[in-house]
Image (cartoon, rainbow, N blue to C red; front, top):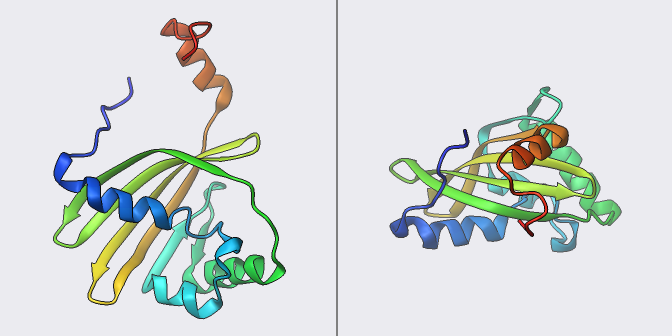
Length: 146
């Protein structure tokens, strides 16, 4: 059974700020440079990709900067945003990212600093769509416009 994920009222403004920044590594239209990506990630940043592989800050920043420099359009949509505070000035933002037929659940840990928001950690997990559809069928949601 899925957990109830409803952002606390006091965190809605932070959720809105962070939702505007995501998906951070898929926005070539922002024209972000390597320096921009470095400025938004902590020195200790790392990521677990949807494949399960671990990536260093250097690897992620280089790939994101190359994608932006090439001007490759990355068509996506994001929804199901949820924010929770982990510690003072440290927040977890989760959401679902849709990239054509590929759907992933994303989690980013953000730290609020005097210079703005910085990413501490990011993870993506591929959604098993057959399992998801089975869950909706079992719940009786299919065919009712949900």
